[in-house]
Each structure stands twice: as C-alpha cells, then as structure tokens.
Amino acid sequence: MEFNLVFEVYFMIHLQQYLSLEQQSQVIQACREVARISPLYTPKMPSGKPFNCQQTSCGSYGWISDRSGYRYSEIHPNTGKQFAPIPEIIYNLSKSLATQIGELDYIPQTCLINYYKSSGRLGLHQDNSEQNLKPAIISISLGDDAVFLVGGTKRSDATKEILLKSGDIIIMNSESRLLFHGVKKIIPGTYNLLKSGGRLNLTIRQVY
Ligand code: MD3
Ligand code: FE
Image (cartoon, rainbow, N blue to C red; front, side, top):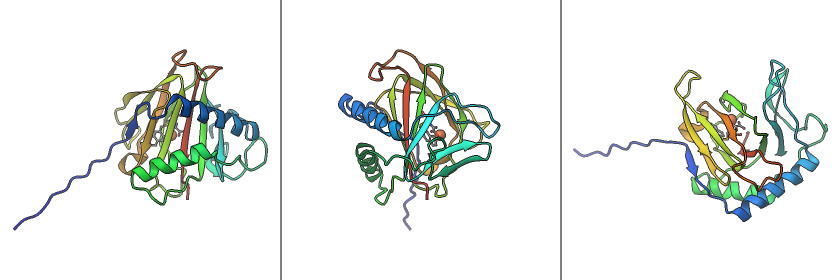
C-alpha cells in the first residue's frame, strides 16, 4: 500500500522591497488623489476613543468605525459621498499579486488607507468585518519603517515583531487571514519619499 501525506502550512507572505521607488511614488501620488476626493480623517473606536492614525478608503466601500461599531459603508463619513475609485495602479498591483497566489477571481472592492504620523500606532486586532473571509488581504507599506506585530488566532497568543519598510508587501491568506496583528511603532525619519514624513499603509480587500 502506498500513500502520500501532504502537509500544507500557510504563513503570512512578506515580500520585502517588492515595489520600486518609481512604483512607490506612483502609489503615494495615487493616494494623494484619493485623499482630495475622500479626505483622511481620524476615526473613533466604538468606545469613542480616537484612533492613533488617520484613515480613508477608496473603492465601492470603505471600512468605518464609530459608536455603532466596525463595518463597511458605501459613504465616506465626512463627505457623505461615495469613496473615490481605486486608482488603476493599486487595482493592477493587487490583481497581479492575487493572481500570483492563485486567487484568479479576486475582486479588489476596497482599499483602506492608513496614515501614521511618527506617534501613530494601531492596537492588536483581527480583520473580520468582511462578510467573505476567504479572499486575501494585500497590504502595501510606504514611508517610514514600522514595527508590525503578528500573533495567533487568540488575542492572548504571543506576538512576533516584523519590520515593515517602504515598498514591502504583506499578504494574509488562508490560515494567516485571521491572525491578531497591529502596529507597535513608527520609526521616524527612516524614509523621505513622503514629504510630510510618517507612514502610509494600504490594505486591499474583497469584502463580499
Ligand atoms: C495580519 N493595518 O488596516 S497591514 C489594518 O500597517 C491593519 O496599517 C496595518 O492592520 C498597518 O487593518 C497592518 C498588514 C496586515 C493586513 C491585514 C492582516 C496584516 C494582517 C490580516 C490578518 C493578519
Ligand atoms: Fe488589520
């Protein structure tokens, strides 16, 4: 008798310095254009406490947080209008990355843009506001370095620190999709493509 035992172990995918400087500045420019239509704002947690970063979104939906909780909305909370469309460069990059991990039918429905000043951070959390938790979340880091934390599927699980640099891509799929994670700190002055300093993080998501 003969059989094959196949173990598949899934980790988060971290592509270091995947984007060229040229691509990084094109993505930053695209974010500036999004922010003209859908401005950055400081969201509030359901408790009323403000976030330590600013956010906006583009695409058919935007992730929002307020007294009513975390959810996706078709309307920007400050403008009362639809979010700006996902810029072509961000759409194409995410489709190309999704294809490379075998998600041929990936639909980039929204891109959440987080902007961190040097004092910015993001507490440990799970991304589970999406109705469909199967499609990957694709993240693009730009600007100053950040110390990123990734843990397990329980908040109390041990975390590991990962340095995220400008042009790095993180892909959370399969098993890693629901891991707790957060941004511990920004390392100011490590990068200067963002004239005002700080760090931008984009997360491209398929919500439904
Ligand atoms: C790990 N953003 O917007 S991106 C978020 O750097 C968020 O701004 C962080 O967490 C940031 O929700 C981290 C990398 C990332 C994105 C999604 C994940 C890591 C993830 C989903 C599951 C586990
Ligand atoms: Fe997250």
